[in-house]
Amino acid sequence: MSDATKGLEFGVSLYSYTSEFGVTMTLDDCIADVADLGATGLEILGEAHVEDYPNPSTAWIDGWFERLDRFGLTPTCYGSWIDTRRFPGRDITEDEAVQQLETDIRLASTLGFRWVRPKLGVVTSDLEPHPVWETATERVLDLAAEKDIVICPEIHWPSVIRSKVVDDYIAFKERTGTEHFGLLIDTGVFQKAMHGRGGGTAMRMGNGGARPPITPVVPVSDLEAIMPHVVHVQAKFYEIDDDLQDHSIPWAEFLEVLVRHGWTGYLSSEYEGDYATGRTADQLRRQHALIRTLLQQES
Image (cartoon, rainbow, N blue to C red; front, side, top):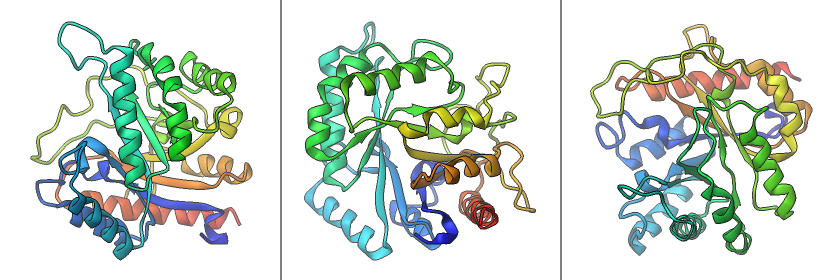
């Protein structure tokens, strides 16, 4: 890292390439593009990006580390899916949730990741997680400590920061006293306007239209109170225009809070804009250029 980036490092979530991965781009293509745009951190989704998940071959694991070495990349956050509605007619049990978390923590550790983002099924429109999250997470804290993994649930739109969801996560961390639990902030929380996806031919689930009719307004200042608990940032964005402006995410305000608090870590870009061949690569470069420019202005 350099003084110009204020202790912040640039990464990319491979979820950004959803419309092209397996269609016009291979895993190697995606990883090469991440390195080419100047990022150093790599975020993945276990089920989507690990061949023969959850039991990749030794050859695949060796190839994974060869890629990281070749491109100078560091594994950052591993996305895990705890599907509470996996079984028809019933919810997932606590033991089943624990088993899934343990599987992903072990695999994330094997692949060199430091953070695991568990995505659980939700029970409210503002994304309050299924109640199994707390007991299941507590039961895997020892394993997380053993593997030096930090479990970080995602604060994702339409959740707001001042909410029961966030309060419960912080209360859990304070009650257990663990250093292996924290918060992942998705910058889509701060979006000022909705963006419905369009374009492309890849198979996907909808265009983002099935959303609450009113966009929650979350001031960036709300981030101040939870900064000590933030361990990772998914730098969600939808569109950077030709003038390198983002009309949805207030980047200048967001970065000012991070810099003023002396926060260090990865900004892991997550593109969720329109689908089109080559669009992800272009938009990621625009976003990194915008953020680097703003950080220089913080000097």
